[in-house]
Image 1: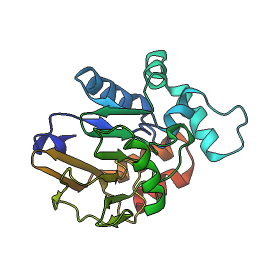
Image 2 (image 1 turned 30 degrees about the vertical axis):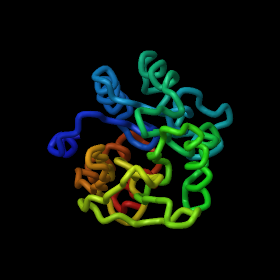
Image 3 (image 1 turned 90 degrees about the horizontal axis):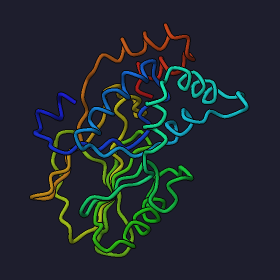
Image 4 (image 1 turned 135 degrees about the vertical axis):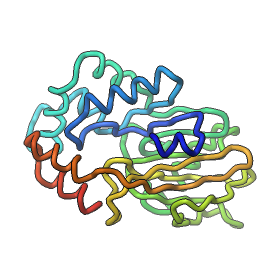
Length: 231
């Protein structure tokens, strides 16, 4: 958040999975809810939904974590998560945790084909030119090339990418709290509407302390070790 402030960001968007992996769900939600009161857009992710209504059968690590997270939250946290939309639009942008074609099915955008399906669904709304999603914990940018099919571009952190609106774009901006590309630094992106450009960032944070908190809370070791490894 401090890094984004230095970029002079004036509109914040949270792309879901606010909680579900870490040991500080109430603190995270307090921050996000305060931002929402200031006008931030917040969409729901699959782990947010699981925290609201944990699986009845506790047979997996994800179910155990969802139940633990649910038990930490107060009613106003649960109400906030429950009422988040699956997708939101603002001007030429559509924001969704997973895919625009079936946001409640939590499908992953992992390649050009899945990106095309999501983008095509978004473009039913003629004003939409940009789709921003999370879910995959990696940073990628897909764009319409000279032909019909999408092309995938791997961004360089800190380098602005021109994203003119005569093309259509889909970005997966990565994960603040649990990157999975071998780099423990947090991920996010800044979109500048004029001139249209998108900059992906990696930001160091005290992931060792976050891992320590996970272990102290008694959550599964893998949740801590993957923060340290960024994988």
